Length: 52
Image (tube, rainbow, N blue to C red; front, side, top):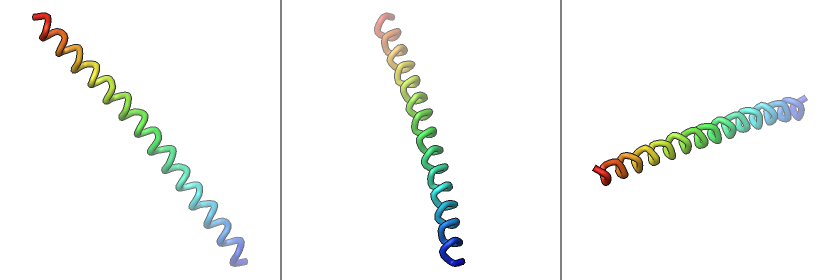
């Protein structure tokens, strides 16, 4: 009885850890895209300032 409770607890723990891992990967992906777009925008502004 105790072993099956331990296994189900481990399964829930792994499920939660997997969910957190997926969440952090998504946050990294979207923050990377946002940062890249901001850098491109800043570079465009610098080029426009050099032209003027």
